[in-house]
Length: 414
Ligand SMILES: [Zn+2]
Image (cartoon, rainbow, N blue to C red; front, side, top):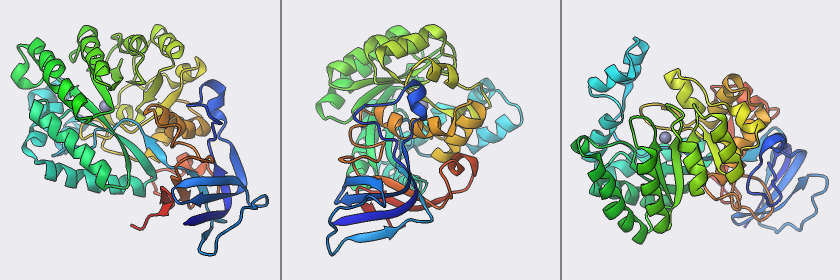
């Protein structure tokens, strides 16, 4: 089956020519083609160029889309989400609006552990149903690849329930899904006085099982003040690597607590958050080639400080942007909104934000050979927007401009 997208007003390819990511000034090179065409054969991109140069032989049954009023970008790759959860936390949102602190909210039963209680009570079926609906909505907003973390179970059974739900969703849903084990998201209440026993449980029971059943591609640890120490994170992530998972870290979110340095030392695929990263951490990430995944929606939603995106980019760290969609600190998965916040609050340019949400997001999942740009041989994940030019995407914010979603070569109907 052939699909030809023709006369695309602006075709933003983010072509990387074989590189896994873009860093430094290259993040601004989005390789935009005016009046472009893309030919798709089944699920793969076959040809990319200007409409004028298009010359491939079209089959009789080919579908042709005239995109003269539309622009095209690669589908977004949201490389950091906690979208599998039950319950919600709008009460905390209201408390914060009244000026209550994180501590006060936690004392009244809020925070991660509230979502843990609700998620433990939910069945795998309940969780899948909730998540499936969220995945549909994400696709409508232009996201075609997403990472999903466990981490609201925090018991052996509940973490495995979450990972199995993620595995089944990746089978049943058209979204490309990367599964991450985040058993070390918080110390569960039952282990508050014996945290070492919980780390033992993660290392000695959960990780071997998850590795054997191939339930996760990545293992993440919340390494920060009040969560897991650098020593605990090291032990967990080394164990995960020995079971075939790649390392990720929630790093330097609350303080410069050494998470990004550890990510570099362990050869992690990404270090995420980085609101408090220092120059030493930045240098370590750049040298080790670790993708820095920034989550501007969290800083916006919690009214916290932002990660130093300019310093990271200017130092040559490959920077990605993700939503961190979760019920506590960012109840939005809109990648265009994340781009707007990145541009207005973190001084990123629209072009850098586009690269960060596509190719570099794919690199944070080890998938940039398949998705994240519109190039020959890659999976045909392309979004058409009803906009006159690409800068309108972060500029004309708070509105969904998606006209068509093409996932693996198929135009989705919603
Ligand atoms: Zn997170």
